[in-house]
Amino acid sequence: MSGMDDAYANAAYIEGASDYPARWDEAAQSFRTSLGARAEIGVPYGPSKRQVFDLFHPEGEPNGLLIFVHGGYWLRFDRSTWSYFAKGALAQGWAVAMPSYDLCPDVRIAGITQQIAQAVQVIAHRVPGPISLAGHSAGGHLVARMCAPGMLPSDVMSRIYHVMPISPLSDLEPLLQTSMNKDFQMDAGMAQAESPMAQPKPNTPVTVWVGGSERPAFLDQSMWLADAWGCDEVVAEGMHHFNVIDALADPHSDMIKRLTGNT
Image 1: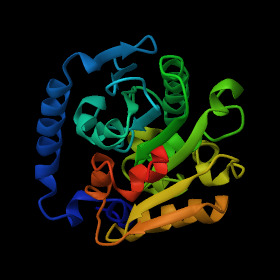
Image 2: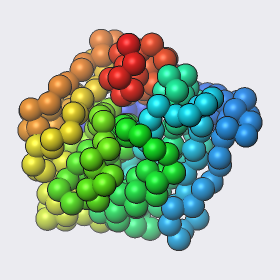
Image 3: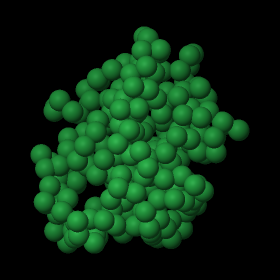
């Protein structure tokens, strides 16, 4: 493993890392089942099989809409693994949508960014009220990219209440030196164009969130974005890259309070 591959390797430094995906999948399936008709599964937003989203409805009229974008280095996972993490916002009366997207190397990262922009627009027209965007790891990169000028139409952007990149990748240039770039197929120009920290500071409220026990590379990536944008950063003490999102499932967590405005 090269030095840069090691810097961005999460599972190798998390005890019991191999157990997490199965645990996430099991909790997600159980959660979807428990919602019954309040779970809309596989709603299309684009032409490919992966351009679909799940939409979870609260009881009664929604107070707002949280869109969560999953991670996996733009290479793995889909929406179905993360359903359980809708629990916190749903309990606060917010609808929650989780899109899948095409993966590298079938598409480039810039293409995934455009897919998520399309997903946000389609989902926004399904649920009224304020919209918060949260994304984890590569998903953190994708929700940060939604803040770029012109990425979302003004009628959608004006509804954005809060954006939360969780353990985001904000500067893609270091990834050029990883073996993953064989699938990303990025050059320096593409890495620069897709790096959120190179974007103008957005007017939308942003909180960058990262686990205090994450790899130094992810602590750096989060700090770079918070510094570039002059936005809030929360370093969650003792949390690593896989459990930093656990707070999304807690209706009373500080993370959910920021995303929904409920105290």
